[in-house]
Amino acid sequence: MARPDERVLFHVDGYQFKKAKQDGHVFITTPEGVNVTVHVTVLKSFLSSVESDVDLSQQFGLR
Image (tube, rainbow, N blue to C red; front, side, top):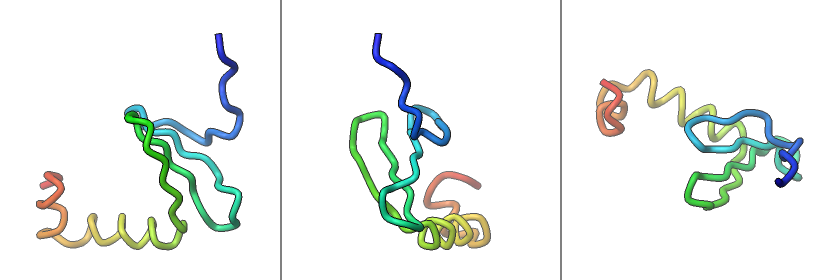
């Protein structure tokens, strides 16, 4: 059995969130195995927009 990855900060629905090598970035692995590195401020801005913009949140099926 493989050891758990200590770098994983948390899991959400099969997604793994890790601190990236670059400062201020988060490394995300999807359940399909796709890896994405995103700057934390960009991710924060995106999430804030989805939460506050009704039209945008509807596009993601959140309202």
